[in-house]
Length: 253
Ligand code: SF4
Image (cartoon, rainbow, N blue to C red; front, top):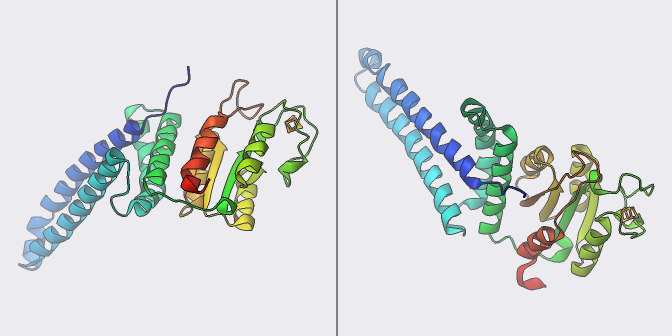
């Protein structure tokens, strides 16, 4: 049975990081305090206020993130929180995960889950023409000779792989769909199509880098399934893709 990625792994690592940072900040505050007093009488106060502001921002950001997750809806700044999580916190969480024995894959899954939650919290409704579904090449049947990168509609619809169903989904909702062989092509597809929102299917590594690279474009990431190992004849739950599409299209369909 597929294990559901947990947002709480990321939150737990975040809380642990905050505790360690608080200890470091305390030391940073306490140790030079005596020396600063010798330079100027008011320096300890200025220093304390500056560090206090850093601690306040950390606590406020952490609480906002946790409340947004618990409430499941945007409180405020959730699009900024998404950027903070993707660009700043995620690399720290990978490091922290390594220290406490949580695998990189688990932290990546947790990050994807958290990102999806924040994207959904923000109600990014859009028109079908602004939605792009981005797929990995490994989802195509390994023995299929048809070239679908460049134009996925070259698919003959034989049904040996899920490309057929995914094209049908894109036709049903009138949305754009494309296949990328890697990060460079994915970036080019995004630049050419200029989507407002993306539903991306990929493995943990490609999804996490994709979500980071695409920011500020909101991405709902869906992990592929790999019954034959990585990068070959991978699968995706079509209902999850459909659910993500409907999350973005909302009442427009
Ligand atoms: S569904 Fe399309 S892409 Fe998949 S094997 Fe058949 S022709 Fe090839």
